[in-house]
Length: 241
Image (cartoon, rainbow, N blue to C red):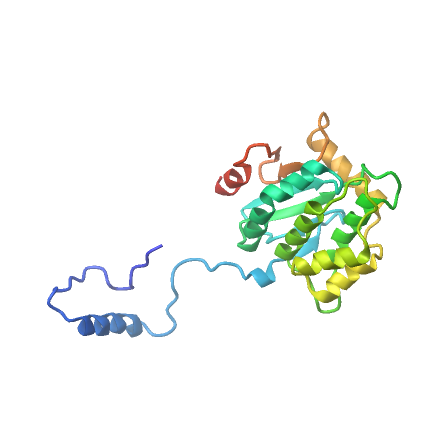
């Protein structure tokens, strides 16, 4: 993007003016306004401050700024292979858009592929909520959380024994989460009532599409409609609309 110098409109410079004179003229224009002049335009958000919080209902994890122009919910099941495909195909782009303030994502985990209450999906879902909990003064950012989700789904083992605490910690550190937060994740304490979470999030999902209440489902909160994630350009079109 090009910028015009304040007050420069209307000036014509003779080609015979030396470079040194031209530089002095430009500096004079810049400094004559004083050091309080503001440059037009919007600053990009600080990635280190990208918010991460629980949804107001307590059953989702919100990554990104509240004023992001695009806001979506992602309904996802830790053993769902198509959810893994979503993260492989779009995880990096999601992290980038969250980082620059263009997108806010609310993750709503489900655990319907578990055989028991404390199964694989429940453990991963609980780890997601632990990632959103501050550990002392250490807090994860929204972009780091997205990276952690990407790690969890890319390394998923449907029907397997579930990740150990050390494996969860390694993935959290690899995603950039602060060490104290990663230690909390490895400790595996209960961060959410998984049964209540699953019931609530399935209810939200059923309201969106009672005929195909499956995962992954991506819902555009701004326009109130389910997005076609099988269109390779769905995310580009979302942030450009």
